[in-house]
Length: 84
Image (cartoon, rainbow, N blue to C red):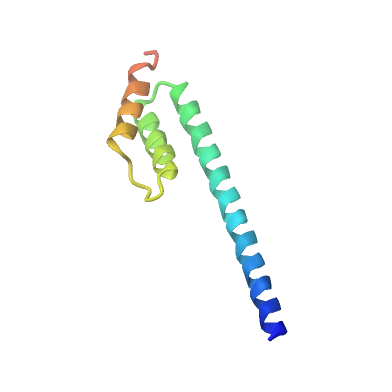
């Protein structure tokens, strides 16, 4: 019986560590997508902004689907871009 509990505890610890690693990787991905979006916003290519914005906002969503508010945020960012 004691061995079973040790195995269960070890499996739980492994699951927790794996979850933490996945969470860290997701946060790094989101950070990179945000940097890409910010870089696109400093340029003049609006299609690149839309693509980068959609990638960033969809990464923030649990289901990966953009909301109307995400699309509006991207549209607002597009409207505030300097025309060059």
